[in-house]
Length: 215
DNA sequence: GCGACAG
DNA sequence: ATCTTGTCGC
Image (tube, rainbow, N blue to C red; front, side, top):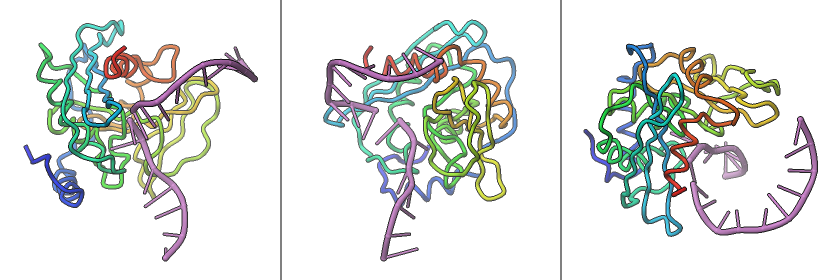
């Protein structure tokens, strides 16, 4: 495990060093549980709250949750989000009685300038299949997404597809989905859809968000 | 040099 | 992310 008390410049080096270890093909057995991961901060920005909600993949019922409080040590820098949030998430992960089969993270997977968003970083460190589910774009370009739920367009960077922009609810802003680790693009797309019911965000994320913000 | 920029 | 009430639309 690499250090976390690093400068932004060192963080970028770490991303470059780890990026080629990210696996972008499906690599998992039966998926029984899916976990939502989210992080929140206190008014002063001094403490980070990480929350994990583990759901039964078939029923979307919550089977276990964990929360961890961790001092905030890294600033928010676009492209370096994982250095701010992952330490707290790792701490919360240790509190679970069993590791989930797959992670749905708040933020990008490989739809990142160095193909190493928070879902890729977290998935790689834990060696758990992970998917990035972001509420807005960090990098890449795409066509307009039709307004109907289920419609989607590819998220491109030059000639490379790095994700999919997916409308999870009619007439509501789409989500940016990208593989994090041990998951392919199509599979990431399919799994996110399966976790969505009547709201824009997947149930996993909704539960984790509630926990992280003390609700 | 001028914007853009996950949470 | 967070600070915050009511309000417009399906």
